[in-house]
Length: 287
Image (cartoon, rainbow, N blue to C red; front, top):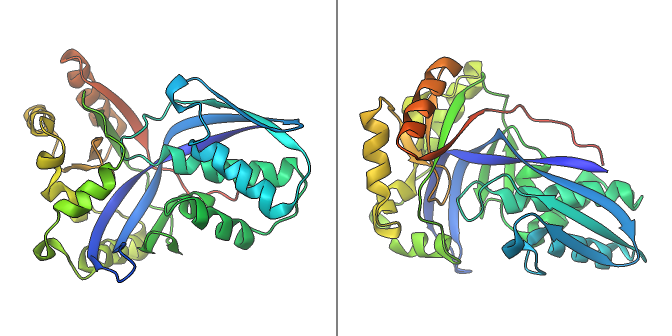
């Protein structure tokens, strides 16, 4: 069995405040895009993971954790050999690890003939990570709480995005550091999410002027040198520029593929790695 796991960007990401359990309350809109990891599954006696990125081939990988947790919760006696072809940059804010974990849950549910419902798999997904439940749906979703409470929205009109990968990498704990850098004055009340939601619900249009990421306020502190990439994007004609999630990956939204391609060509001329992707509709994953 071979399955594709898409990346995501945050069209909107707000922090509403800090919770009593130490986590932050968020509200935002997530969107899957056409950049994929590829996972292959084969039944074996125990759980094994191999990956094209050697540094990700460990028991800390969310794919491995998802397989172990599902095996323990289901009581399945066998195992699986998983081959992960990484194409989504990791530690970049695109949710590749969470997407891989969600696809692993759905894939193993079928491969092992467990018969779990989507709702049950969502419970398992929430144990693995806050973003994992979103990838059980894909498309366009409002995320609330720690990111695990989801409201499906209509698919947006096709949008094109140019993702820009800065030379610096995100480090372990980068998301926690971003939260610590925020001040209460940068918390909002969900108004950015509500405005984008109304636009999408009215006709499927994700207005570029409504894009928002609270971490843009502290990105230059968290990622020294990131402002250089913002300046280059502005210089070559990009308009709305935001962190894709918790960074350091940036994106700019473009209405048509031709303009997006022109922006990407200008980035290539400056030896800056980029990806041209489009928004993806929600898909029914077979469970």
